[in-house]
Image 1 (cartoon, rainbow, N blue to C red):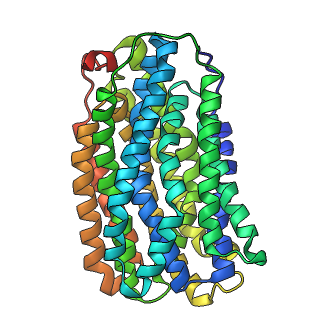
Image 2: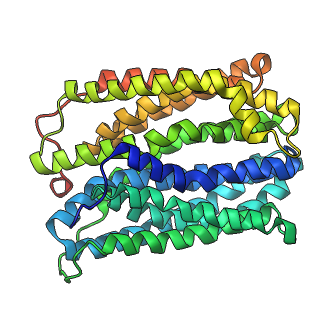
Length: 428
């Protein structure tokens, strides 16, 4: 397969910024059109359910499929097509079960005043939820072939769908049209990803059928790791609802603004490290040395620290520039700015953790991530709960930061370089 994708992190960051632009703009437009109230709280609570029930599943699948897709395409391109299509169908089936079971539990846990609205928005998010599962397989396979720009750039379609939904507001649309637009955009994203992946994969038929059980085991462990930490934002939003109407929306706005400095890592540095270490293991059957990993991650940490300092200094200005419009009140602006300033600390630790995690994923040590992530989530929620009455919304940022610092320390402590890395074909 041709690996024509760019490896330039600046180029990839630019692609990621453009692709994530609509997703960033939509909350800003929602803030201007609806402010922070009961309706926006219900919308963001339902979207938090999508992020937790499906986003963590899709994230775990997208990350864990990378070494398996690389192996399948390298050794039998004809069989790789059938393998990835079967994996996508399996992901949708598993996602459907998770959604059907999880939504009633989520709605039951929501405050009574928001319960019915949250259920309505959850139902509207169903097309987004199921399509996201299939997209994860093809997005991860593209990363395995260094076509990271195509994988990351595909997020543009989801965001454009949401923007179309926003555009319908003057014609009778509302937050419901945004939810539907997200689903339509994600359905198109699945087709777009699959089409681009298979333009570079041979179509010759193969009788060999690679079993999915190894991928399922790795994905299961990675999903547990993602779910363990992703449950924290859901619990945090439920906790935030106790602070009064609008608190969930304010927390969501602050978290979304964190997307701005995260683009360089999420869209470039982190996937590049995963592709690089996966390719190295596939070619040499040996993972990179521990010192090499720490040097690479150390360079990324310096960059993350510099960005975090800038974010902390300019947080109030950023919030004023992007959110202080329409019905977004001055008291909303003050709370979001303070929360974002605290989140700059969490940003540095989180970006460092993401880089270290890619070494564990490339070496299929997903079980280690699952165990550590559980402790990480417990620490994050416990700290936020203990500080909620005294700090308010910034308590969530403090819990986020401390838990991720502890997580990074554990990842470094358990980092090792085995003499031989397990290959997907050898795990049967």
